[in-house]
Amino acid sequence: MRDEKFCNSNCPFTRAIGTIGNKWKPMIINVISTRTIRFGQMDAIIPHISRKVLTEQLKELEEDGLLERLAYKELPPRVEYKLSEKGLAFLPILEAIKEWQGKFEIMPPVNSN
Image 1 (cartoon, helix red, strand yellow):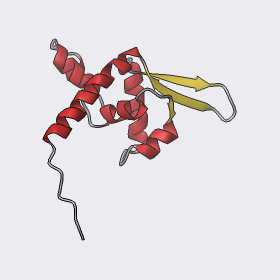
Image 2 (cartoon, rainbow, N blue to C red):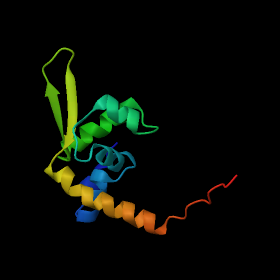
Image 3 (cartoon, rainbow, N blue to C red):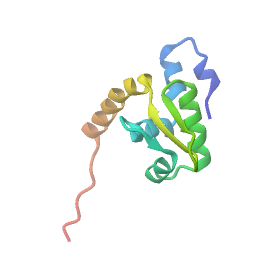
């Protein structure tokens, strides 16, 4: 659920956190990346997210202009998601976060038994 106090702040950083600042949105953006993907595929890939929360997060990401929802008039109906130009521009930021984590992450020892 979006925190409107963050989204309406005068501070650009605070507004950015309001847009992408929960645990699910960066994961969703990372999963979609440069491909087009269906809801069921995302649901299977992202661990521990409920279908309700995934639906809410996708709607907010679309409202914020980070992704595009592509609905096809077929039977059965088919909907796909892809990142918008704004969403694609966020990918290098996610990569920097992954590099930062990798640099300081302490990996548990491998069991040699």
